[in-house]
Image (cartoon, rainbow, N blue to C red; front, top):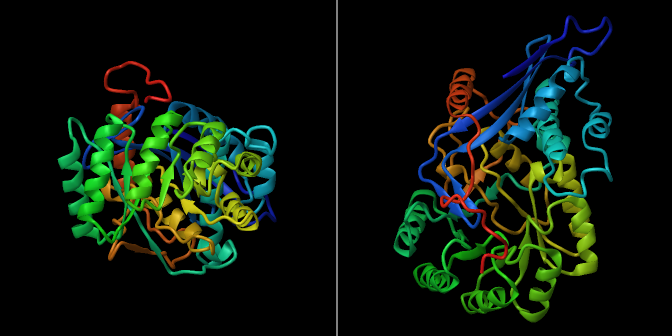
Length: 402
């Protein structure tokens, strides 16, 4: 844990200035290991940024947990004391300036800034008594549809994945299912996709192989996607150029992305490539709330709808995702969420009813973080350290995998 405490807020300064900063990595247990094309997730690991003011307000932000982000956030902690949380542009140019790092999707600096910005807007919302969605321009919806996210577990195959889908639909009322594929041989996953459609004829279906397929494999898979009425395929291949070729040769299936297109710059760049139809906005990867709103407006101007990507959030960033989703008018798709897999959390669990989550209406993010739970999950990280997501075989997995 990194901690820095300012001596005092300067006379005449705002009461909202940051007096204390803590950087808290967490390890959170999940219901099952999650396999994807390049590895296996055995627990969710996040880094929480906690900003406290002299008068007792506390703002929370969050990003993915790994050594690089932790090192950067820990190094920044001391310089954040005395910070006025309203001065977000000055902060952004210090940490993740336009044109230097944002071109590269999900960079460490961009994600570190997004966590700090989240905590700042949580503070401002608490100080003003308004939810973050009000600070972003106001909500256009009070509920957000959520997609049930289906993963293979250890040694699990088609039958287990179908059983998971049934459980998710029964437990949470999902009407959209997202199938994380690119794990097994494509012929097996084609069969699984057909079975999902047979069992859930009225559900929205989407698939995401994380760029695991080459062009020819993608074209075969997209033929099945078209046959089964998949609403979109996310990142069939890993690059803009490959996805542009796939989209050209397989009309009738929408392509989405949070890999080939995962930043404001790559969203603009794709106007030249024409690789995707639906950018999937991620608060951390795009650089925070304000960048997420800007991405939505850019997509609107470019004639595109958007979806929301998930990065294995706690209640802090799941609430943040809901605040952002509430403000995106061109969001017709159910939002991705890993939240149902969590077995413990930093706050009382958020609920999914009828496949929807209610946008918190309380001040800031609208989530009441439990300090005891936060500390317990930080102690869990102290026991585990940062975990690898490598493939179980220990061998690097090339892209394309098939």
